[in-house]
Image (cartoon, rainbow, N blue to C red; front, side, top):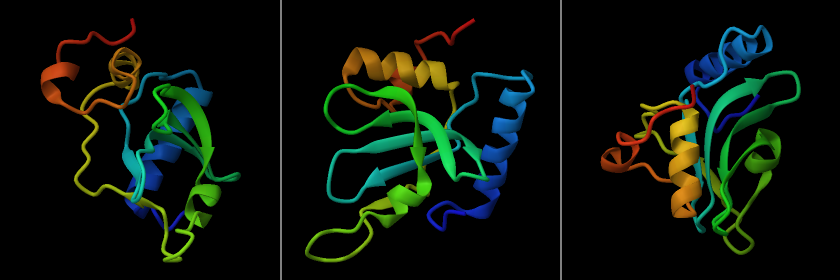
Length: 128
């Protein structure tokens, strides 16, 4: 399991994934924000398959095309800075996902990047 993400958040993500698989829910709020320490990449993640360590969420590699996708937490954890040899991806402990993922997606598609400002997100209606 990933050491980047606190255990309590992992448990929420696994629970969210189970709800989606059971067709009990499909538009969870992001649980965790990961970001590149030395770049523009951001991942807002809501679900986790604990067997394969694959998370689902809004992935923005900083190239103007954010999208919903799957990402390997093992791969993200293995990324190191070429010279400094420190981890490239870290958790944002201050992140609080207040809106459904569809709201973050709509805002990101319009802006070409992940948007976290309440003033923008509060004006967007979630998917029905």
